[in-house]
Length: 442
Image 1 (cartoon, rainbow, N blue to C red):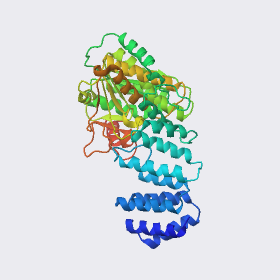
Image 2 (cartoon, rainbow, N blue to C red; image 1 turned 135 degrees about the vertical axis):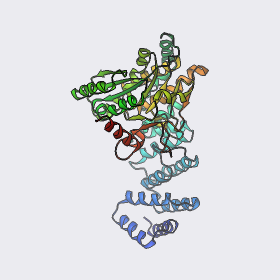
Image 3 (cartoon, rainbow, N blue to C red; image 1 turned 60 degrees about the vertical axis):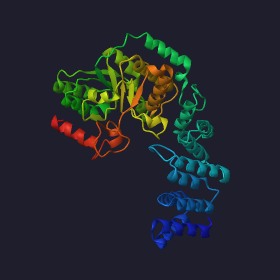
Image 4 (spheres, helix red, strand yellow; image 1 turned 30 degrees about the vertical axis):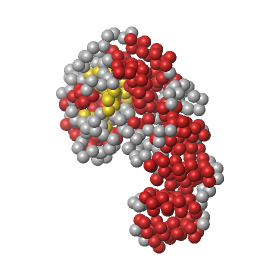
């Protein structure tokens, strides 16, 4: 580390952030002397990211790089803070991914190759997808091979999808081959062979859980619908239920009376959470097309940790005449843009075809791997692909923010979900859940 330049950067950060210069100098120099480079870079990158003056922020980032231009960890720390290349960033200024691309491009040009290089390529894959360059995102996604963070497969899969490369790829864990014209045409033929679809005015709420999630969340959800006087049918697909699940089902039946609640069961040989949890979350989509035909009803696919402030059959009227309705968190990557917490499929040829394609996509991918959020990857890619195939016959719509907003609103949304608001502690979802369980003596 060039100590003179390093001290100058510390002084610039202290002045820009209105921090005591001497105290900051002592703390950062002690960290640097102890050899904890990662902590040093993370702290300095965080402080630089908080500087309001854009020109000064850029100047100090450049000055910090000048202290150690050959260290890839420094570029990654700055890019992480200045142009976060990962999940959970909504509606960003287009200049932000461009800034990250420039920073990480400099790392490839100037820094010494290290074990961090695959992570640099993975982050660049994410950023180039966001910047609308899937060709470059693919190139960097391929260069990220060997990255210990397997999430780079999501960025590579998105790059391939954006280019219409619907094939099984040797490097990408996500298999897009079910979206090929041949396979998709087979799904269209199956949809054409289904009984005629006609507006039914009926709805089924479809949820999949393992036994533990059923015991933890299902009671509040069923009782919530009962208290609202909802007319929906409710179907739970339970994986690995046990005697306690059976007892809870009987207790709930005694409370809700004639409310139409049905259950299907499946045994699953446990393989470990990294495999089991993606399957539990996705199994509802594997049976959704069958549930649509069985109930002759619109299908509302939702998480177990979801509660409603209004009847779901009233909420989905906001979809209008759309065949599919979902969130659209613009700025998010493909794997989280269409959130799977609350999705509506009309009892129509288009709605049924989309569900067939989602199930085929998931089965194709489960033959190769299990990866978290694969259900949301399936939702996005299959909705978009079905719309390409059907043209004007199919419409899909985004929920207004009143249903499931991307961030905490001033007024509570119509759908409360633990996935976004938190399952525990003091959140609108947990407060509503506790209120419902107390009211029914559970």
